[in-house]
Amino acid sequence: MKIRKILLLFAVCLFCSLSVSAFDSPKIKVGLNYADSAIAGEVTLSFENGFQVGYVADDCMFMPFNFFAYEKAIVKADSDSIRILGDDGDLLYEGYSGVAIGICPISSELDGEDHISYTKIGSIKYPEVLQFSANSGRITIINILDAELYFKGVLPSEVYPSWHEEALKAAAIATRTYTYHSMSGKHLYLGFDVCDTTCCQVYSGITKCQSSTNKAVEDTRNLILTYNGGLITSVYHAISGGITESAAGAWGGNPENYPYLTVVETPFENYSEIARGHWTKTLHVEDFYSLISASQFAGKISSSIVDITIDDDTPGYLNNMTLTDDTGRSIFLNTSSDIRSFFSVLSSNFTIGKVYTPQPYATDSASVITADGIEEYSAGTYAAILSASGKETVGGIKRAYFLNGKGHGHGVGLSQYGAQYAAKAGYTYEEILAVYFPGTIIENYALYQQN
Ligand SMILES: [Zn+2]
Image (cartoon, rainbow, N blue to C red; front, side, top):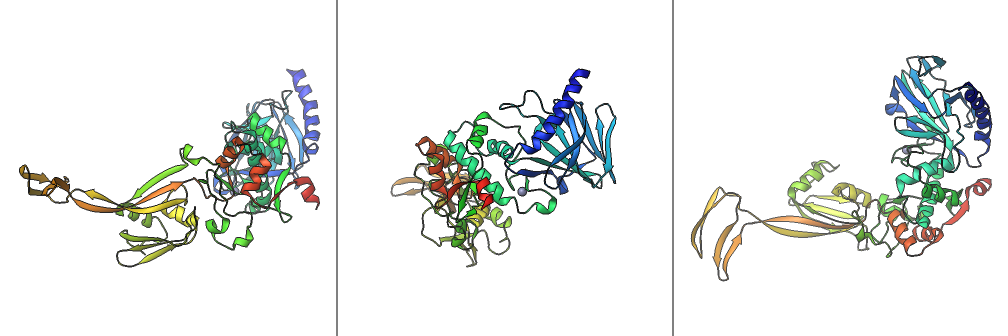
């Protein structure tokens, strides 16, 4: 065991120098626990071969100053200190709470194409460096890793690893482009580039990595999408329903701002084969009451909607709609995301029509003369009358609206299922991206940064 630890020491030093210099893609900082999600008190880590402790420079360079062959460690925080304890309770490190400290797993002889060393928190495996800092006893955790490795972690959460390799490659490029485009954005003030939720892209370390999605990332290494020399906003969604939505239609604004996020017809997307690809919804007065109460229009219109006007005649996603109640009051929904949100449906790619359904009489009881004589009815049943054509059931009429929908998501940019259907139809990843992001070109990010 002692010999193994000594060997590990050499492996540590070798790994430290290699791990920060061998990559040609940038490091990315992923916020795992921060602000309200910062961990109170302590967090337990586990390792395959022990771990290194070190500082992390502003440029993400990890500078280890110690290593430990423990299988578990506990990071503890109180009001003014952060400590690392071994699983035997030994104090391994103590510092001021505001000073970030990095922990990196010791590399394994298994490391290679099918194995990457990791630090485990719960059931999640994080590669490379985890950075810990503390504030008022709460621990902030940031994963700092090679961007290409981050993409391998993200892709299995966005697509099915069993999908066609051309669809996976298209998705890998969209994921990479989206990440680089958003890295200078909303989370920088918290000290990281992206978070690990749907706010950015879902990331659970390398836990879900599959060889097919890893290969898609490697086969498209550093490839990104640009338009007029700039990184594009490569948004994507699950299923478009055979036609996409424009950025302006979905979120408002000037269509000229995103000329590559425009409406594209995609007849190869066989959305009706997918469970979420084709859906319906019937809305009665009581349903409108719930929808209106939950919306920004609560109190501004009654649930007795007598008219719904679609204010555009283009096919596909609805992005302009007026609803009017029985007192003449109206509300306006001016983007497809507003419409999707208001109706609480999978997408705004739907048609809407009135339907009338017969309802039981809302009386306590009734007596009617039928062809069979006098019949008594109690509350909640249909009555019958004798007409020229015989005995007919009658009741009240209930007005409802019927939504016939396609697709799932905002509909803008790449349809993930659409890419899969396109790949199965023989499209290459270049052709798939050219369909969904018209006018864009594929470039190498390393070269892009030099220009
Ligand atoms: Zn985010």
